[in-house]
Image (cartoon, rainbow, N blue to C red; front, side, top):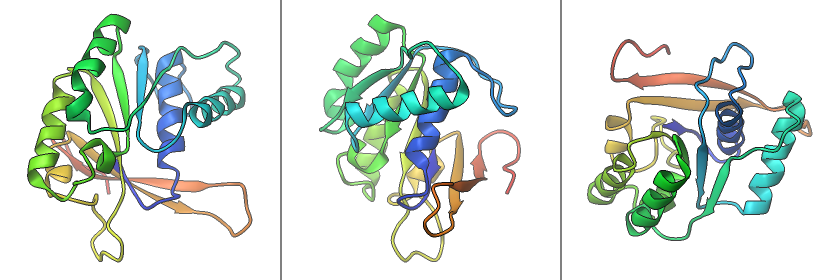
Length: 187
């Protein structure tokens, strides 16, 4: 799970990682296990994702078109899980990006029940997942917005923080490893 405030670059970073995995393209010290991917999107449009993926590929010098799959989502994952399971099986999907947690769990991320149902549905896919989540407004402790289970259930949790000069097109962000189930999180 990757979390941070709005505008920190979570979706862009997820799309970047998805391209690396989809294309089997190691970059900047990131080794990847290639495999077909699927973006489950509750926030943008097919066109926006396509343009972002295309720009990432061009920036990396990847000439071929991506086979990265996209699905526009408008209902909780639990309500759509049978269709998503079918896509995963039929297309041999090996990883999925969930953008983003709150609408994917039905707009009730603070509900333990909705969060647990979301994770049960996601687990039924039996593939690697990357979940994007927001942070609560005006919270002193920066954690994913919602139920404690957004921190407890994922195997690994990263906080994203950005630094961007006013008017600049350059975005710098840091990843802070806040939780891992095996090993040590590197803060």
